[in-house]
Length: 258
Image (cartoon, rainbow, N blue to C red):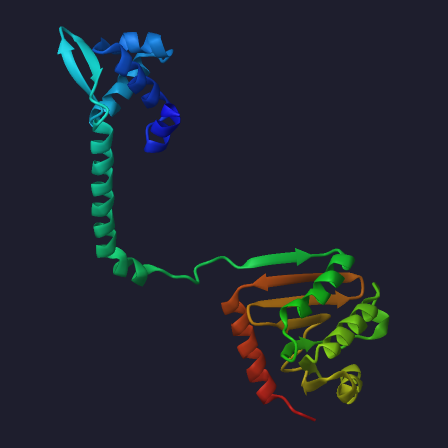
């Protein structure tokens, strides 16, 4: 119990061994302490010097040899009081600079969390994950290229159907921007059935291949599917997500409702 208490007090293992030995031995050199505690002489002397600084033991010189003896155990309370005073002084100094530190603090200086997938099954799972971060009744923002069925090598149509079904069940409205093609025009004509609004943009202004991107509050998802090429990535960082969301809003306002 005594040893554990001294360790919790702040002494390390060697300091505790040396201190307890000195309480029994009285005034002795570091070489004898080393033998009694199985601590090398040089280490024992260094440890004694640390205990002297803490005011728990004293040093006296006889000839060319340093002798050490323990102070009264009440010195532990004195040392503890000194620690308290030191903490108060440190707290005062920190309080003096805390406002300057706050001005330097940048909470946004954090690397975004990213995930990149190329396995088709993992890409499908990531696609469905999008809805986990959209609340019931909210609006989902995305841009998409409507693909020809012949380009779907991995059965993504089934995943898209599952996605749409879950979205509608949770009353999540979808705003979609898409390049104007024959496929996207047919897609747009079915908007009322699928709780969405699609706006078409001329391919000279918005044209990308095999992609669908979703812009959420604090993350964005991009899924690329075109023939045998498929991958997906997610970036979780609020500033990036909000920037792309702003781009979407500008394009949405510029696009045609027809």
